[in-house]
Image (cartoon, rainbow over all chains, first blue to last red; front, top):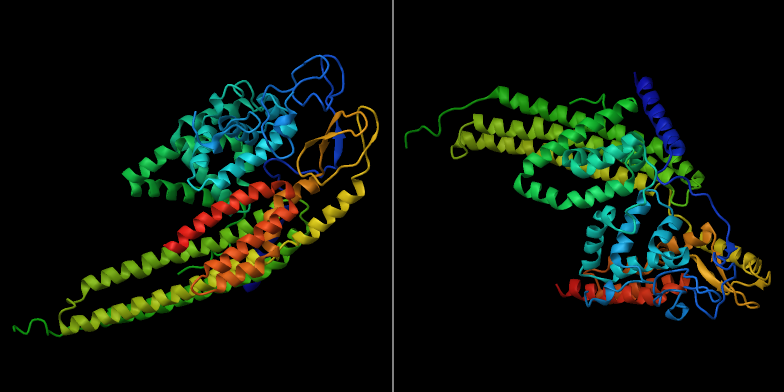
Length: 82
Length: 189
Length: 276
């Protein structure tokens, strides 16, 4: 009887652990990603993005990358408006 | 427009935008989708996503966080996101509509979700698997029903508690059966 | 006056019932306690193991397992509460209604006995509850604190090893990342001045997520000093808060300005709380 109860407890724990380890989590697994560098070329004229002319529009053809007015954030500042 | 500097847009992203974006992220939209809908690039979105919660932390009147909750509940009506939905099954879509229109259905599933966690399950995932409702939609429903549920509690505290207890018992039974009973089921008075 | 209130009253059945009921209640709680202790002790190694093996940065598998265990312990609490309500409290009301009024001598005697029964049962339940809270605490602390300092130092080293390994997507020129970033950001090529987008690693992003917790770990001794002061010393709280914010900003210098604003809020709240 005592043994049966012990078995029940242990199998409960085993199942709980299994379930915790194998169940899918909301939002999925987080796959560790390495740091990377990228660039968004102008989709209209194909030019790279120039620093002097800001972040919001293409320095060469005026294509609008972003329709917003940048404010003073963390790394992005007002000066980065085109 | 309010004079409250804590409500000033961050990189052009207003609190309404931000709140709706959070709801939609919870419904499975990616950061890239969100940024695109808001007309910004991902680095700009990520700054806003970091700074809006800072504004909430700085505001001891809880005004910003209250508004956030309201706007979050109105995410489906936000023009920038109205055409943007993560793919869900037809049944999931019907359940999602129902949770926003049928208060009892919402209340029952809210209890089910909590009880699922108490049985070691990922409750949000359980709701998604079983009903096809995303966490974002669930939270939208929560924020929309919140005021009415408070009224219900004020009007009939006991009735509310009875309903909650009945839901709780139902789902405790369901999840306990699935795991072969509770650990102390054999102990009787 | 009429001798009515001193009429002889005897109810041995009730006394016997209280005795056996109390014994059953104690035995029931003994059994629940034994089971919850057994569960806690048996669960801890597995809980630690899953914590150590869980590669998820949020440790969600561990969190689910812990929630499940706490759920079972709470289920025992609920069971004890329900039985107490049905078998002890309700019984006390019924018993009180059957014995003579408390204003009579015999009535007083029986009411005292019922009260003693009630107190003995409730005290036993209080001890049960204390033990239950202990078990929950043991489960919650089983995995130990995450070593956030080690994780942070590892990320600093990782960043040092990659910071000069990037090149401009426009001209191919070498770009050295000036400082550790925790979110996506624009980086300007020193040669052609093009705007590149730098995305930090998952590990670096987690530094931002865990920064406050790490700052709390670093200043835990100051927090303890404050919490152990009696009455709570607002000066010690200020020392702890100031140090915690400083550590936080050291970890994420980009957030220093925001952290200061948060600190201002905490101070405003602090003066409010201590003023009360």
